[in-house]
Image (cartoon, rainbow, N blue to C red; front, side, top):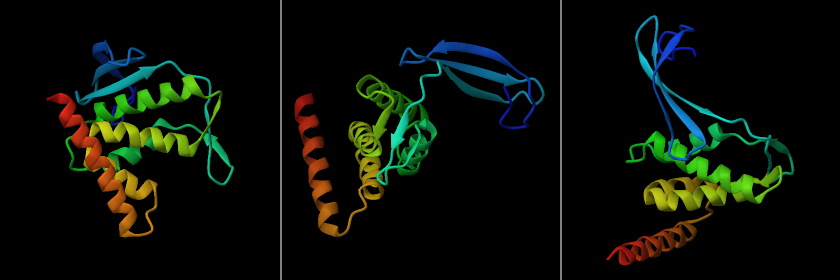
Length: 159
């Protein structure tokens, strides 16, 4: 495994454990050259999943694309990379369980929104503002009212 700091090709696994999702192994590694420590994730390669975009084109499902979109929305928020990875794993499991080889991009977007609503409201609103391409302030206001109801309902159920 290539070290992200010095690009050396050899590293040693110093800790290995199953991630929360049960389908991923999390490994802590140490570079043989610079002794930097880094984390890698190992998972079984699934059957390719195609995403059908709005214009009808198809592209391969990419966890990285979802990760990057969520990460940008979660900047300066209390959302860890592990939280994002776990959310993406739940999204991917849902897609693989309910769709045979192809899924509309809209379905993925809605699943991401659902996960973010549970994870962090501000991250949800940031993601939604890009994903939904709001045309005016009224649409944003509707989203804020929707998320406010959800947050209040969660708080009430915890009492």
